[in-house]
Image (tube, rainbow, N blue to C red; front, side):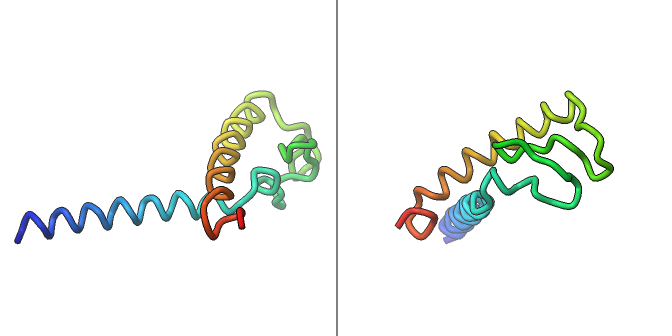
Length: 87
């Protein structure tokens, strides 16, 4: 009985994590940086100017690109799930 409860709890934890990951995919990578933190974006939605109107540094752009790629994968996976973007 104890072993069954542990198995059930582990399954619920896995399901909860999968739901969280799927939920993160709702936000399009094209919209993820459209905040007050930035004032200009390129065609892919990556910021090119910060709130003060200064160019985003090369190192910051690299980090943002990495986050953008991760979000793109999540969003594509979400849009393929039933009830996600695909109908």
